[in-house]
Length: 334
Image (cartoon, rainbow, N blue to C red; front, side):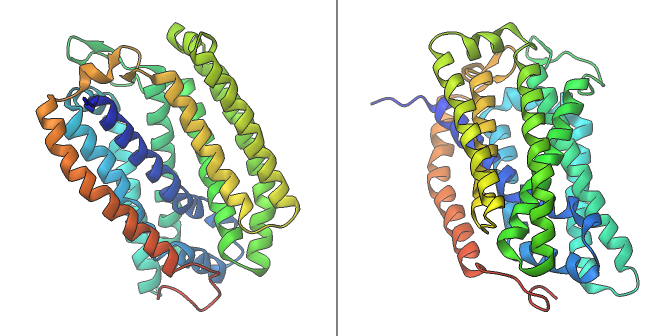
């Protein structure tokens, strides 16, 4: 039995990126909501809800980026020069957010500065990720086997739109996480924020989806052609179900359902990207097969992945299980 190794690896890297978006998304969302929290006690409480897991969540970013370099070196060599400013901004934002996280609890003299840094780092990282996604969907110019575009090709109205959508999405993830992990006034405010954030996200997803199908003829074909059109009809239906569950969860003051519904919205939106991209890895022209390393390399690396990925999943699940339940004032990281 033969396996399509490039396709398997594309699935593994796609899974790693999705895991990062979901797990680090609510971390970044907490940072985005910082200015709207009432006082320092609430801000520290919000940080404590992610303190045990936030750095482990970024493991998936390392795996996704490292996997792309090792398994699809041609795609890495094309994508990185196209998105260098955004990648650098994202990494600087994540680094500053991490430093601010530690110093917020370690210093008393400049807590306000580090709290601002936690918000600023989260915002910069989110915008950079959203614009990178938009630039990738918009398409990267390839000449021969190298990036053939300009220094500012990543800056387009579409990439700005995707950045705004991701800010709304991460903020909603953060708000629904606070609903799940807190009680009292902060939970009630998070519930109130989730309603307009959810409405904004739905509108932005619609705008991004509508704009996407007109970017390239192949996107139009994959969404409305046969047989891919079948899946394109399923995704909006399931997305509507997830949005309905989000609304029901907020209306009924359910603690868990809004978060799970928001995760569902992200997963379905990500699936929509897969419909648009496949079989390309770098739209509009570089396919998964063309970008892949030799099969002997893919086979060797897959042995490590078969061992490593279950280990990461196990310790991630264990850490979330150990730190399950509500976080109350005075508890957490100090």
